[in-house]
Image (tube, rainbow, N blue to C red; front, side, top):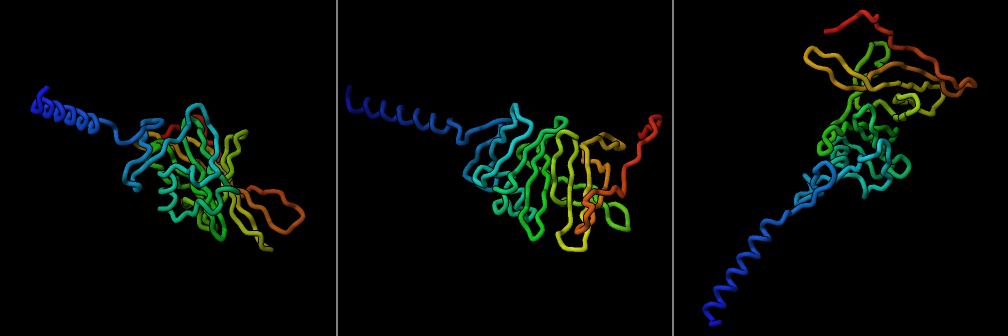
Length: 219
């Protein structure tokens, strides 16, 4: 083979290698088609392994999905400081995916993110008793506990000071009727209080949702 032909052959081989390199994917993909990240950390996402699992925890900051960490940071939530004591809890309830995120603060609290879109966690807001004025909404209802056997979420607020009261909001996941469509939301079903520093440590119900007449239809 003469030198000219060798040169042409080398150029063709080099061109084919370049084309193959360009066609190779630059990122890997995990469950639900999620990218494991790219060169831009601000948009990188990690897989969340819900497949076959409805309740699991993450107790190491290095294992927190990056999109969840960013969503918490936007709410000024320090995940890493309390994650070993209060791991992130990933849940599936009634076919809907959520994560409970503990935020370290003077008085710690949980945030809940809706993971309907695993790439874009959405902050959940809860109905909450505004004392003496009715009900409002808040993304920070307190320390949240999932009671799987009862199918309810309990959110507690209060301090250990005396005298004082603790407040507990109880939620179920349910459908909210709208004019156009139905949406899944956390529905407040009961509010309890407990007085601190007394012998009787039982909860007293101060509000409970009434049952609607079966004949009532809202459109």
